Length: 91
Image (cartoon, rainbow, N blue to C red):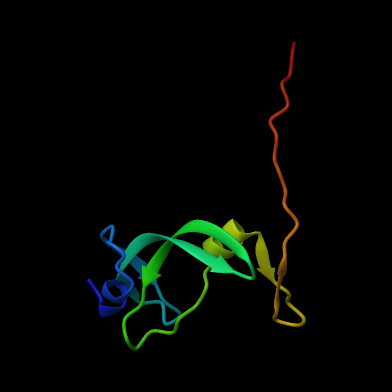
């Protein structure tokens, strides 16, 4: 368990492998937390970074908050929600 998840008192749910930008597989602890950003709250799985790792808000967390990164301004913005419904087909 890393020092970071001990500081915020989150119990880890085990370790998981991730492929990094250098195409290496690294293992990190994961846990479940409630996050808040821009006045929105959501429950999400987080990866506990090692001291040398960068801290980022991942795609899963952003989607849970209904946010996305504007590719031009690189700022967070509200995302358009898309709901896929299964149509009932009768023959």
